[in-house]
Image 1 (spheres, helix red, strand yellow):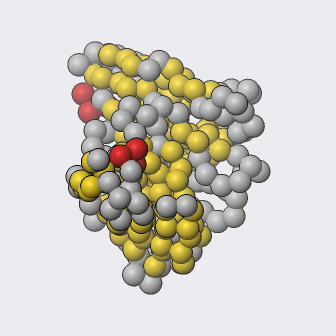
Image 2 (cartoon, helix red, strand yellow):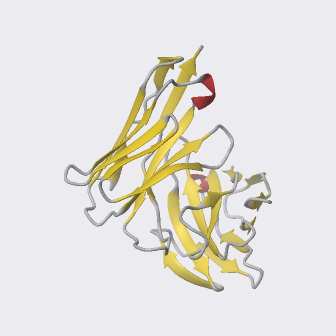
Image 3 (cartoon, chains in turn purple, brown):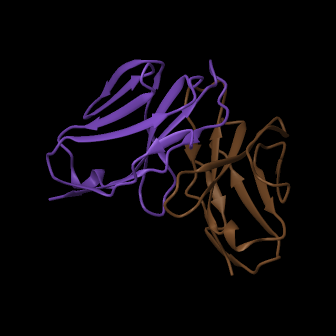
Length: 114
Length: 113
């Protein structure tokens, strides 16, 4: 069993739709949770991070963490064609400001069509 | 402000050869991590360097080695290349004192034939 599971999709939605992306994990030591966006032929770009359980909102993006279920989500409201990319969840058990190893899901490929 | 710079962008090598990939971290960052991303997969952690020493290592064989220089730049070396080493190699930099989150480079696409 992989430590982080993510449905690879692909996911195809019309412009303006609400997109829901999810990951599950098995290691209860994970404390920090991140979502990265990766465009084709580019490196991952950090979208959002959260610590422990709860919600965090940033513009059209909302990240949710449910540690009791070992489940994290990213919601994209009013999706745009420019949101078309691969979305990677990542997590780490490291606390404080020291960044160690990140554990990634395999990514979900999202296409938003006009 | 330059981000993370990786070179070369693309590389084709033959099985059994050796390869060196290079990374310059974002200005102000002192920690460099290397990840391998196979096609259709998420990045897999290779190792992390801080203060010129390997601080953490993932589940990669000893064929994978690295180095960090006093200016914080880093190299990833892979010996005895296998076809399965074909992947996108990503460098990520960070700093314990500049907030949270890695900055990734665009990667080096390595093809082993």
